[in-house]
Image (cartoon, rainbow, N blue to C red):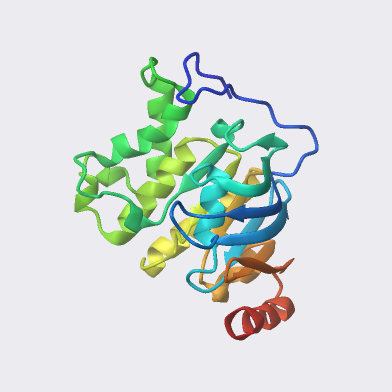
Length: 256
């Protein structure tokens, strides 16, 4: 994975620390600007490389906040986050963030292929133009998500499920090692859910690490290695994604 000569951020890319987990959060407190109380409080979390972890909890539990903090979009008030042993942002090439669909301006005049190609920009920096290889990677990601026939379409013309696929294709085009997916299954059809799960399965087989915020308890077993439960900004527990644990933890998170 090459380092751009003139990267977007002031920091240079750092190689992963050998043996370090994909994510290590130690006693982190994270808040939104102007908020009176933090959205996350005292969260400790370790995610092993090559695993798929579900972030589960009610609305407002802190799932999106945690993903944004790991992506470097929200500051950590106290505590620390390490990504592959480095500070947040030092391995920016290796982290891809897929926001909730409602956070995107779908009226922006850009085609699907151009949106997906922006996933390559972190490798280019300010001055380099996308190469043929970059375009081939973007095209392969579009095909993988079943959007080849819509590549020239404006993103605003897509259905909700197609928009979600386009966002995931952009994340895949980045070729990151850690993927942060915020509610990728929300308000999409069954076909899109199956496509996303297939893509996740393939990524895990490649040794990628996925952290996925989701409300879909029905498919946690088999699709995920671990489930992390958040409630009111606190980490309730981190367990194996097996039925005997999931039923107990679901009851605790939603009613406890």
